[in-house]
Every structure is written in C-alpha cells, then in structure tokens.
Length: 347
Image (cartoon, rainbow, N blue to C red; front, side, top):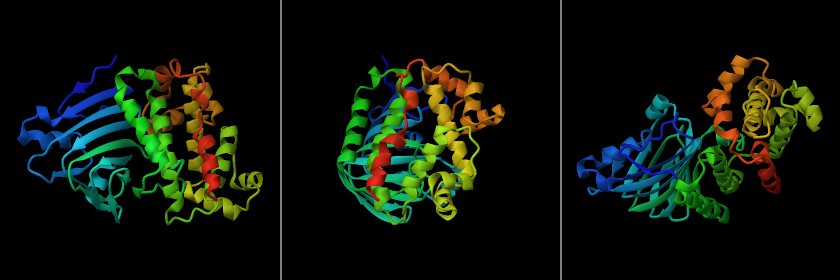
C-alpha cells in the first residue's frame, strides 16, 4: 500500500521510484506563498495567477516516464517563450483534458479555445500562452517526446482536439488509475504508463490525420519499415535493399524516411525498442550484452549510452525493476500492431 506524500513542491525525482503518488493542496500553504508553491511544481512554465484568491490542488501518479495529474485550479496563465525553451531544452509533451471550465490562448502560433471535454496538446519545445477563464478541473498527461515520435512520424500535432469517444475512454481510464493509485503494483508502472500513452494516441490520431500536414502514404509505409526492422533488428539495411523489400521506389522510401529523421537514426531507435521489449520480458534470460548484440549493437558502451539517453535508465536497471514482475506478454507488446489498422483505415 502506497501513502500519498503531501509536500509543497510536488516535483517527482526522475531517479526515484518507478511509481509515485504525490498530493498537493494550497489549503495547507499561507495565501502569500501559494502561487510560489504551485510554481515549484510547474518549473517549465511561467505561471501567473489571474485572481487574488489563488487556490489549487492536485493529485499526481507517476508511472515510469508518464505522469497522470488531476488538478483543480483557479484561473492562471501558462506561458513558454523562445528564451525559456532554449534555456531548459525540456523534452516532454503534455496533454491537457479540460473536465470543467474554459481556457483560451495561443499554442505554437495557433489560436485555441478549449472547453469541457476538449483536449489541448502542448509540446514544450514550442511556444504557448494559455489562460483559464475561471475555476477549472483538468486531467493532465505528461510524457517524453520520444514516446510519441515513433507514432507521429510526420510531426507531433499541437493545438486543440475536439471531444471524441476515444478521448473520453482514455480520460476515464486515467482517472480510474489515479483513483486506485495506492493499490497498483510498483513494478507495473512503466507498462501502465505505456498503456496510457497508447489510449491517448488513439484519440490523437484523428487530429494528426486531419491536420494540414500531407501524410500521403507515409504512415502505412513507415509501419511496414518498422515491421521489417523489428523482424531482424541486427540485420544490416541499406535504403536500396529496403526499397526492394517493400516494393517501392527509392524516392518514395526517401520521403518516408525523411519524416522519421533518416534511415540510420530510425534503425537505431527500432533496435533500442527491440532491446527494451526483450529486457522487459520475464521469459528472456539472456545477458544484457547478448540482447544488445541480438538487437544490432556490437559496441556495448555505445548501446549503454544510447539506451540511457532514450529511456533515462540503464538496461540492467530496467531489467531489475521490471522484468520479474511484469506479465509474460509485456515484452512482446507492440503498439504498431494495435494502431496500424487505424492508420490504414484513414487512407
């Protein structure tokens, strides 16, 4: 059983436990100190209260790299400008689902107005200026950008997302996890976090498909590229061999790979994901060095550096915290299998 930890500055320690519950309430803070205490929990924003009687409370559930937050807050203004973005280099994305209240502002140059049931997507590498019109209840999901970029190869969408059954489902499941946070097993945290990621991806995909970006056939083609790399992650691949295997022209392949940052970076990311799945699999007993080699990494120091830079933990630490407690099917989990059909259906 996990006890909610009340503290004035609710910022989870990245090096701390995989699952963490934090509660914050300005009721226990002197009025003159409330905004400062709240800002301590939102260090990547410039936050200004829009009323004299500022009040807020929230409950945060950390699931590995993913945070779920349910908050009740009086009107505030959130800002991120170019100077702040350059200074902190923050690599997270936040999805704000407004349960009550209204907000208006500009996200990445786009005017938005958000009411109950509507979500807004904030990529913290892009500027924003959003203000609440009144007291609000919010569900907030924060996660690293790397957890989304494989699924949105054409670019992560930002802005407002209209209500949908998928968004309601994802929000309901997040609230359910928050409500029973103390009963969740610690070792399942990363898997719960990825499941939350995927539920919200189902809600975000229509926005990506209806955006001004011309995806053409890139989405399904990238999924086919992923499948080929995942089948033999240690195999050496050239663009020409890949084009022949996929039955497409080099020009078509180059357009798809350009959306993913190029062939070499894409292959490395898929190899790291393959290693992540194997290390999370309770049935996999091979040594970390053997898994790295099977996933295409002959240089162990490079594998270790790359793995830590992407997943914010070492391969051995991941295995120690996750493998022995996750369900047997966790290591084989692949989001592309779930959402490939959704993407193809939009073509």
